[in-house]
Length: 269
Length: 294
Image 1 (cartoon, each protein chain N blue to C red):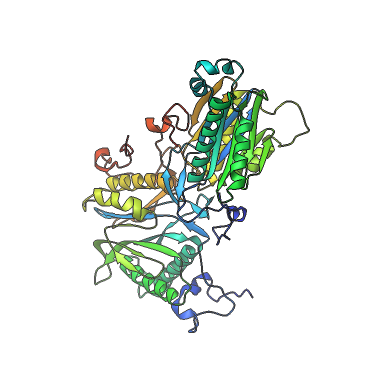
Image 2: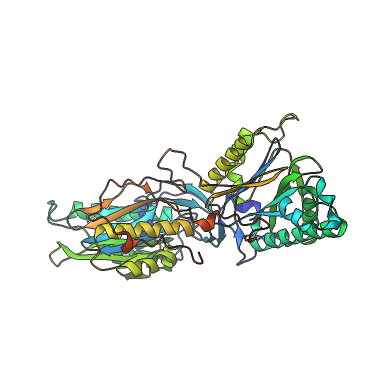
């Protein structure tokens, strides 16, 4: 297999137009399974914005290899993405979207910031859906579930009041909701978030809820870590991604401390 | 326990190895460790049981006793067996890794066999007997997925003893320490650097006191749990000597380097933004509910 550099860097591979019609580009391989993976991403809308949360672990199979990997990134000043799944594909997607944002900025009619020419979150989500579906049709998917968060835009291009939260998976399924979770989060965190969600939640409540869900994911997901990152998009503040920090975990239940496995006690396992 | 290759690479298609976990089988992807000190052994294990990436039990007990002097004395407390108790007694624990079902069954079978011998033949079982029984069972049942460490105080040998038992039935006696389970690979270098396995046939053991041994086990297991996705929870340990057993448990602490995410302790510091309102615990706290059945 020969190694060839694709023109335009790693981002160009994702563009639908760049691949040949026949599907498989000579000398390249197709994704068959993920190698370095991130686990769940959680997203929730609250009053005044949208918040995403994820841990900072990339696993290499069962090995917890990279403990400071950033899975939440801003795309432009009003859109944020987070992804689970293959990390190299997330890097490709992130490069692609940032390249698009750069092109938009450079080719805009106006150079003034307030004449907002950036894609809104809904556009990014729709574009990603097309990219993922196209890759899937070539049997070479980007192995991710991507959550897109941000704001929609009004007809004149200004940022609207309505927050946006949507997800696109590796085969191009795309949907929007007020609460989202990928991976294990769908089983464990989503029911909890649905129970506690209110449309007018304050930011602090939303953050506490996401942290609680991440903590439970750390207890119950083999590939999770208690070092996490939170990111939010608000109308005034734009995109903010926090530094990673660590969560408290609780192990002092009396039931845990009993000596199971001894003879003469309950003999539990 | 997975086959050797799969420990280092992401899950590939496993060849149908005899001792591999069957689909749907509950694994104790695990880290287990036993070390000898002057006077006995310290055994330790993590507490995570996992099924396809879901932690089905986060406080599992992988250390199962098959000989326990207090209970065995009770069993033997009839007139016929007086005198049997005057010699010493062994305490033997099985550190279980591999399939949860297979190892639970093995522990039960070995325990019942040792008890019946005590009643029928009036002999006290020893750790070496337990290891021999396990070898017998594993050699005749190749399909069992069980990788065990059989350790304890052996009253006939008069010292602590550790046997490492592989799925086919291979039994090795280990002089100073033994480690097993999926997480053990990550700490072999750590264990080797501190306590070389074979040494120069020195008579004394590297670990003198019980406290040293307990710290050694807790630290090593903490390191394995940091890296192995199939190991986690807290560290369960037993100190075993001629008097019996003592339970200890530890929550692994981070190494203080901050920023590497321990699977544990913490100080939250989110400088990027502070909550607009202090979140109310009642409204949002979902993780403090007591576990089902408590």
